[in-house]
Image (cartoon, rainbow, N blue to C red; front, side):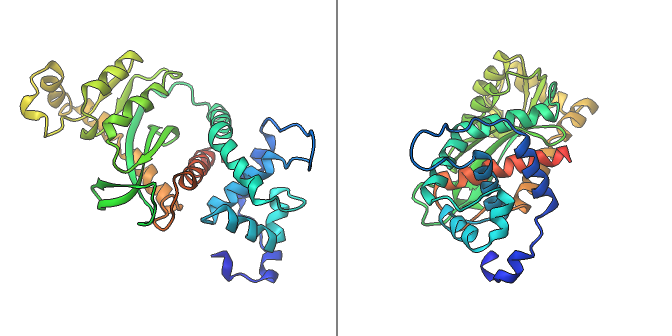
Length: 296
């Protein structure tokens, strides 16, 4: 996209209003800075964070290419608050910091500003993210849309309004029910009554994990398990889902499907990319940008 621009166009480029609002929000955050001891003065983490969102917004496939674009287009340097373009190694260290420490701080503050306190109903699901066939870290998996594909899976928990509460990115071969307990544990800080999942989450372990957090987990009976289901859950749930309340409640699951559609239309899936950490950085920025739009 950017490689076709000329320098004259870059100097007159006006940043997208949503991206501009996001950058102002980043300036308002309280992020710990690395103290200056020796060597060159450190680059502001807020400026580096803006660069990562710029990378995601334009689907720039590598940090190396991001550095080249920042050198070429001075308007992007100014927008990110950079006096000069940092070295590639600086971006690499900052990306690791963001994945491990920066994202949790940013995400928690964003949910606080969105006043997400009592999400009584939470939705859980996953979506396939294809990657390059040459990606050595990706795995083969099955999805209803792509059938067999190579890549990763993004597992999300969202509110009924579409705000993303928690996520896990795995390789494509991971089963949804195996990842669900990790997502459910992350929901303990909220007073949640129901978690709604599809038949892929029909697992006793998933329901037990939810019960330990005081959550009622509801999912349809998986047809592969239907013949051997003689427990109370297997007898009661099909009847409950036929009631008016059950149909309304489970109909809310359409919202998480809409969230996945929005994320993918905004560039979440990158079939030509390779590398787990590269995909993680992109996914984290996509999640934050999605939630940030609820503030506007």
